[in-house]
Length: 268
Image 1 (cartoon, one colour):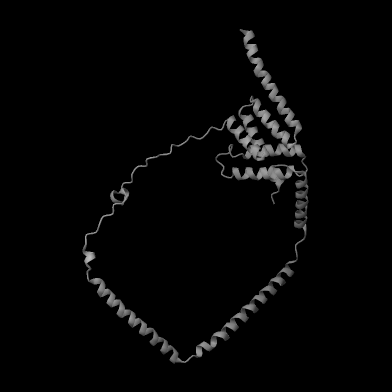
Image 2: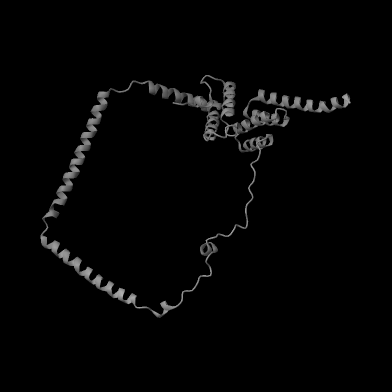
């Protein structure tokens, strides 16, 4: 039985920080953008996000742990004896056989008087079938003789349909007038992951937003705005330490970028 801890890659006794580290590791290993050749990557990624959402909530995690412990105790209970199971199956089979026998006997008793009908009824039915067949045959011969005589309106030259498509008459389909130009796939750069993360943050999917901002930082570790975005998400999730660390890193990157022009001017 695969538990939520197995999906995320954490242990039942891990704290919030260990659970967060395991979640990030699982997201990076199963993200659809990093595994384009795996068709199950998107499904696995959604399962990881949902499992982490349950385990990150203290109340939901306690309820899940209780249910998991109850399921384990249920599996550890000894199975019932095979003899009692066999006796129960024999009783069920005997009841089913009795019901089937009752149905067959009742059906036989209900259908038995039909076999004793006189033979005259069969002859009457045969005569009644022959008379309608003869009348139908006579009418069909009359209709066939009427159809063979040509009518004046049938001798006229058939008119051509003006609305026949060129593809039907010539076998060549006309070329499409309006061709939709194909658009090239958008490159998955820092801007791409930042936009996806911002969209997920606005829709309330904090874990998906965090994963996209992590990928943006991997693309460009010197992007201070990426650290600010991730710090906002961590602050919203309650990780104050991680949020302050990302903001400090963004300030350090901005300070380095401002000091570079000054150092270049002094060197000149």
